[in-house]
Image 1 (cartoon, rainbow, N blue to C red):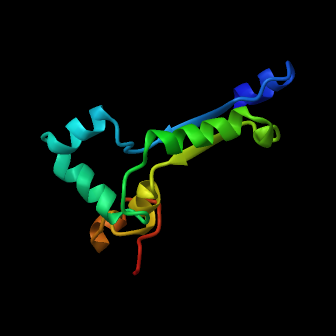
Image 2 (cartoon, rainbow, N blue to C red):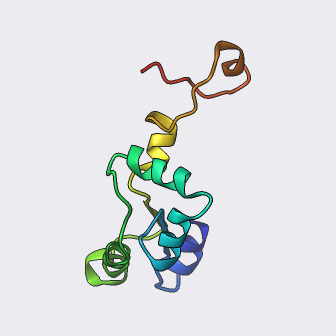
Image 3 (cartoon, one colour):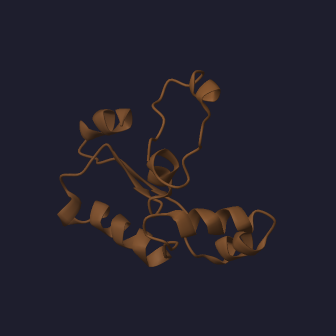
Length: 111
């Protein structure tokens, strides 16, 4: 975000795209590799329930680079099908015991 302020004075817009699991040849290898079970679980328990496609990432890039995104700067577009949200608030959130909860500053999910 700081760079958006600095470069904005020169007329530039600075944004980032943070994709999660995007179905590319590399992701397909990862999904069948040693960590594949964990990746598949993340996708299955995400709000969207699937991985993304390169075209979906490209569409956000086109928005950001085109005239329809001329007002967007200093933003990060997290495109992870809701995995991050699920890690905090959904089925992927860690379950803490009372004693473990005492050591962490964030509230525990009561769902």
